[in-house]
Length: 536
Image (cartoon, rainbow, N blue to C red; front, side):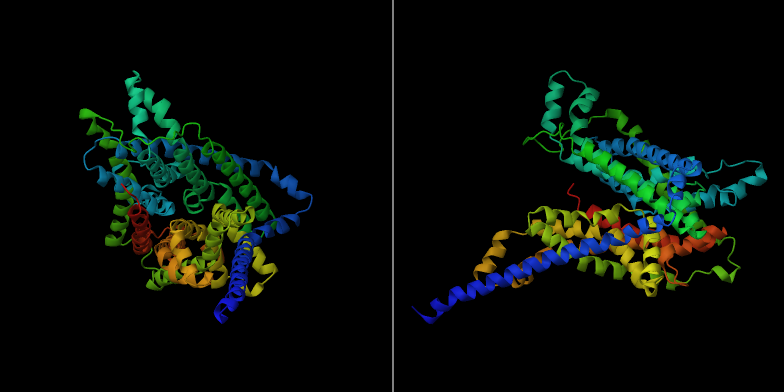
């Protein structure tokens, strides 16, 4: 027996031990990261406990219950309205032979790129008490209906959240087995009957997934209700925090998290119901809806939605950009391009940190099939479902009580972005990793590469597109984040979002024209990322 043959078993044992240590190390790191990301939320309970017996009294106070009822009502109205718009638009752009179908698909998806608070800002600057359209029509004796209040907030939120339902329903329709629909039609089932009995059960999980996103967005939205003067949970929490009632703000935050949990539980029951899902190898997404001459009137719906959600706000911003606006003479609120750089700077930091944190979590969830690895991958999504105002309140309290040096600093702001948006990177990296051919990795291992070397040589180059996509999504969503930035940013550190907030508070709409345009342009890149991945 040669020396090499005698030494080989020992080398294999050492290599195997090293590989196991790497696997354990990645698992421990992923678990620690997952726990660290949600730990600050526990500080809400610490703050709420300072209320003592008053906590229960405040939780069922008439004002608190009124805000709860208003918030739930807003979620219900917006979610229902978004489904009523998103589902027909999905059917039109997938199954109906309408002219320029691809153009309308992109156009009706674009409102998702516009932060809803920008839509609210545009509506107020046009139709509000100090709005351009209101001022122009006042000498003629024409009074423009106000857009403020519950109805205005519901309308704006619907216009900028229905694309969630549109995109998820569209994805379900594209994977629909058309042969089942054709079979229903041959059994003398009409179009509506076939849709109700065959199509709807199959796409219901997709509708539910989109409705969940709409409900969570509406419940968590901070800017739109504030701009529209609707007292919902997010605004109520913010006002209590500003009044230094931190215990009360924490209690309200816990209640808001409870409502979020109820919404997630309700969606999981609908999404898990696969009674309408049929396994078949028929033609996917091939069902065509022949509208005949009605295909032209059918374009009214996407056209109206596009005008209201895109043309109107962009036109308003362009008008302010050309003519200026009230408040330009005041130097105390002057736009600086440094605000744009601040947005880019912290968003880049968040994107880089999110990728570094998401990588071990995503890799562990793919490599290990255990309850712990599954839980580790799911825990960070708690932060994603947590409203920004709630996370910000928790981090403010945590930093003041535990690490005062981090209060209102860039690190705590970037940490908030990572907690909120890192799951986007996890999902993207995890999907890319699952698509890697395991035989390539095993081939590298048989050639003597360690697990770390095989990852660096084989897996990493293949998952780079997923890493880039995840980083881009985190960057673009961080650019738009308002409540966390508002509460956690260093003093004097303004971003595009916070400057728009200040301009609205001061009624100086013209000042926000440039940052609004920049934010819309940058946010539009997020839709480019999403639509580029769609296989139509």
